Image 1 (cartoon, rainbow, N blue to C red):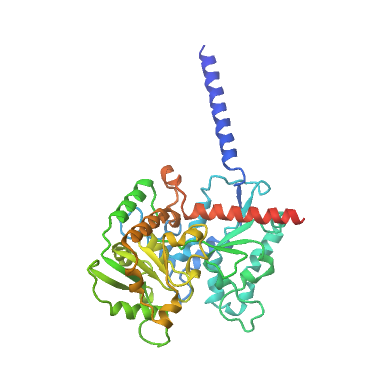
Image 2: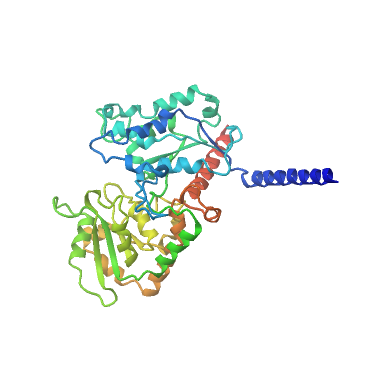
Length: 435
């Protein structure tokens, strides 16, 4: 009798395992990803150079916690001193727990290359190899050609993707530049024309790349901590009309630019009975805010609108810090977000969660930013903020090994994977049609 019970239990276990396998097969249909095994010189060995370049900040303190950096304080469970250039590490760590991994590249719908391209680019941008920036990526291509070349060749690399934790412009120097100027030529190499690159900022007419959110400092490990933050954001009193957290626009050059206009208008702002303060500036010059979220998150929680003027490039990490704080982003050109982050911030819904004030109107025609914002009806402001709150999960990268409850909510990583798979599927289908 005992043997019969034991056999029945074993059969039930087999059926249960079979059912789980069938469910996973269904869940992962068209979602299987293969992580290409690369030598450590393409990823982990690059971390040893974290303090090598004297012109740059020492990145070594930000390698901890798989790229999240050190906690902002000992008791913190969600807040870290995260550097944007660590997105390659953050993404690699999250890929290792992606539920639809396959060891068989022939079954995979996409091939992930765990190459830390942005970190490797530092030697070409700032190091002794700056005159050889056209070589960036060739060593990776040669490896892919020599090691199981059929993987690379199967779909002419259309099914391959990687993360590049810098703006795409930093990898887009024309091969014809002689002498080389700024940037490497990784994305200009014909060998890489077909792969998909996830960058912090895309070019105006991207083919290879798609922009993904800059990592913020908030990486909750469970659903309770995320919901606690959302409650705080929702209840926060908005006593400041507009806030600008950033540098530039101060002394020095007198060339007109939108940051100079913002500073001038903010410094000369009058009072408004609806707000304790019409405008506030959090001076982040010289990178003082970059790894210290307390400097800007507290003021952002008190502001209704957060101004996002372009700087050296159109995009800013501050856009995602502002959304995280429930602060309505104000853009001055569409390339700052609308034409960049369609997987995370729906392009056809921008008017529902942001404000666009053309920078030309501000700089050359004297349009007053604060006047524009003051004229927005209160009901519209509440509606904008409510929509911003719904976007918070879209733009944060949750902590690795997070709770099942939090994993059920898609974050920036999940949406990037969804978008990448769709992009690759579309390319491969077109390729198969042509062939």
